[in-house]
Length: 186
Image 1 (cartoon, rainbow, N blue to C red):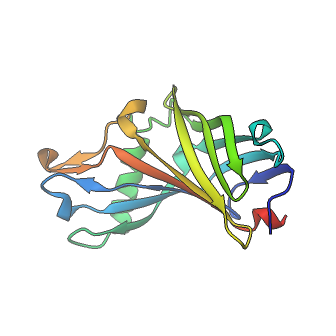
Image 2: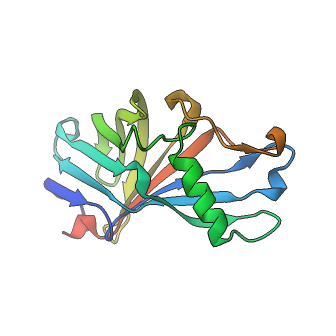
């Protein structure tokens, strides 16, 4: 299947938007590498296969909808209490400050490549700060679109979480991934 010209809307439950974090510091063995998922988000993709530069992407995420889906590593399994603490911390002033900045947005400024292998450069706005990010993606033979981008949290004024007097820290770089099954077959 191939992606054809048109406008596609995506979001849960059909598509997934994941954020992956990793640990650093001397106490990294105590913490977890996290997978967060945006539970409330929407995206619109306008595809022009013959002229990719005319294609566009826009995504809006409700910042308070990020949920901890998985915590790997660590000395003990992640508990529901841990998940609730992480969510509270993530929504706080030092992190996303969701009370003041309820949405995260991405708007493409340039699209290149083919539906099977593409690159989308755009403006990512988090906590009222906007910086460019490049997403690299592809379409699987089954029509699933997937891609990812890595960026440094501190660029957007997000202070990576620390514990144990800084011995355990989340790495400043995070990876965002999207998976949109069957889009090319719609």
